[in-house]
Length: 353
Image (tube, rainbow, N blue to C red; front, side):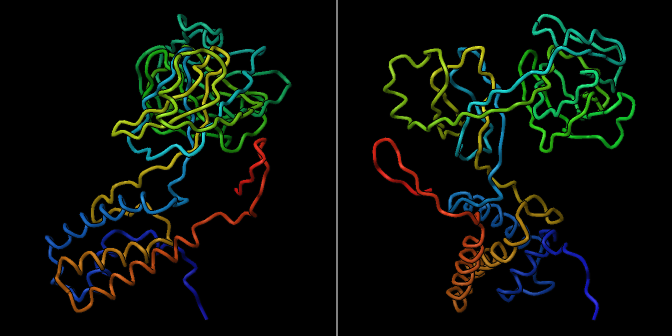
């Protein structure tokens, strides 16, 4: 007996979802006109928008790093963030005391002097800025970048044991990313690997002009408690400097993250977990941004919505039941399998996590 040895059905184009849904409604073959395809794509977008409100789907949970500025308590967040679930004040150690290098051109030490008025301005495209600690290996887990100019860089972070062999030693590959002048951006390395040399490499044709580079490790997180919008309004001095201990998320069209107290120079990074909206469905040849296990749920939901549009009153109840059951099944499965923990709080109340 032979098997396909493939697992690609969940990566099917939107066309297959639409065809399957219409067939469940009884609209077959050539009856699936261009207009019907367009209305199905529109319904798929409504489905994906509704899912962000129905439950906490694990595949929508992401992590991010936010650079904090001394004295700034409010930060505009990307529109696709539906909610910030957790936030931690992150501290890390900047590895200095070594030797910097820049190719082509540029004064490498300027990228590590803690002075935003100087920069390592290279003389040609696709250069790199490296740092070595001699024979001491360092596992870099965070990179901080401050551009001296408004620019778009396409960067790869690499390590090396000897400063010569860098091939296949990539620990982070960034797509084309916009950097604003003198604005710190943090990036996390998923799997840090120790090496005596570390560098960033431009691969998109830009010429690097970097004010500051941070190659950090020894990460420590301090959890912030969440405050409500009304609670934040009761604080008389919202700009009070100190150690941030609370955060609030203002869920506007342009969402705002607020922290209290406002950070000083010792605290410049927030690590947060957020619920992200699902990407638009796109065109008929695109693929929905959902895991394979949600394929039946989205198809059944689309079939029900198309049944409403096609006025299939004879099967509408069945289609609705199929859609509810398909989502219930995948929602029940889409959870973390961890034991329940019960902990005591100083107030002597008990809570379950």
